[in-house]
Image 1 (tube, rainbow, N blue to C red):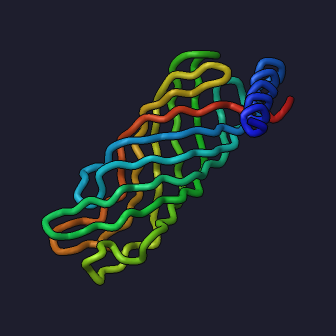
Image 2: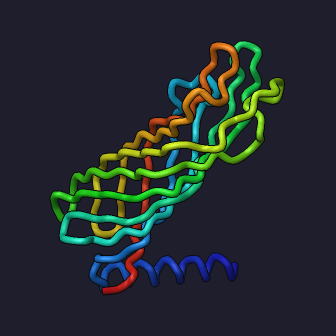
Length: 184
């Protein structure tokens, strides 16, 4: 009961701050989920996102982004692919044509792969350590919320391939995030 009351109090405080502060610097905290593409070694993903954004000029934000995306392994023609995660360390670019409405953005950087060191539980092929990461998105925003459709891709080259199965870390999904203002 104490945790519920504390959580509601924190949410109310953040909501009041979001209504009163100018939104130049903010933390964006969100969740996402989607389907893995082209889905040879994973079925779906779910994750959390956290980012810092500074509105350099009205309608244009720069910042840094990270989080964690968990990919659920898929059995593929006798290959028992392991689950894995991506921890991105990226720059953030967002363009907001209006105070509310449509927006475009992208995270660009490096993604670290975490989890089991092997691609599959019945294989001795090592998974890659990471690679170039990009997550373009488009969506709708208002002062407090962002709703998006996003594509996330980690480029690993030819590392982690088993037979004719490429190692793939890509997804198409949706996300929602809440803006927490950091002051004027």
